[in-house]
Structures are given as C-alpha cells and as structure tokens.
Length: 138
Image 1 (cartoon, rainbow, N blue to C red):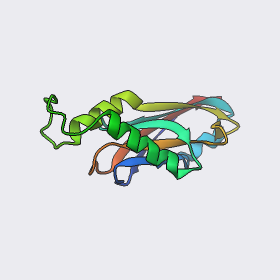
Image 2 (image 1 turned 120 degrees about the vertical axis):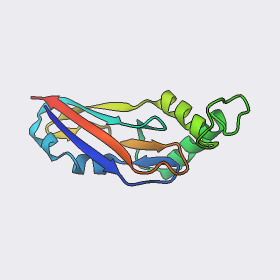
Image 3 (image 1 turned 90 degrees about the vertical axis):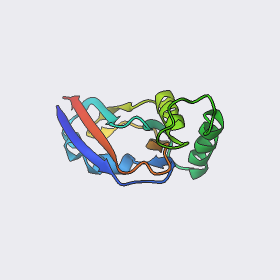
Image 4 (image 1 turned 90 degrees about the horizontal axis):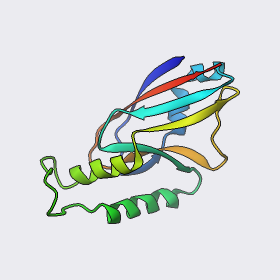
C-alpha cells in the first residue's frame, strides 16, 4: 500500500483537470500491476469527480449547471458567515463527493480515453487544496 499527500495550488472557481498532477505526485503507482487508487480531498467546499478530459466547454457547462442548481444568496441559507459562495460550495461538494476511485492496471490509472480527474472548486477564493492519494494492489 502506498500513500502520498498533494497540495494543489489555488485555482479560480470552476472545474479543473488534475489527473497529471495526481500522477506526478504518485510515482509509486508504477509498482502496482492490478489495484485501486483513491484520491480524497480534505475540504468541505471543493470536490472531486471524473469526467470529460478533452473539451474544456464541458467544464464550463458543469460550472454553469451547478451555479444554476445551487444558487448563491438564497435567503433561506442559515450558514453564510464566510460569504455568499460558502453554503452553495458545501452543497455542491456534497452532491459530487470528496473522493474518486480509479482502477490501476499495469502501473497506470485505468481511466477511459476521454476521462480525467477534476478538482471542482466551488469557492471564489478557496485557497490551496490538499489531497490524500492512496493506492493498493499487487
């Protein structure tokens, strides 16, 4: 079993491909022939998901959809101490989740041709984000 920590640089609000950063931070994955990799984000206002890795308009549409689905400044929100993007960020993170699991095959993540790991930054100024990457197998 292997485990690495990775601090991602601060990014603007939106959906960002981080597959390459995850792989660069975790060279030990090459030692696993068959296994599983979990990528976990240690934050409650950002999330992770796997989706389209080629066309950037997909990531823009994700941002548009989530902003329409979970709007800012809803007068019924009680938790608003950290600004109008705070509670929506927590809700968006709950919808998408805090981790992704990817099979490992022959020392590589077995993602599909058009798949990539997204950092979903739901805050206007979320700061650096911390990941824990764990892989196990044989």
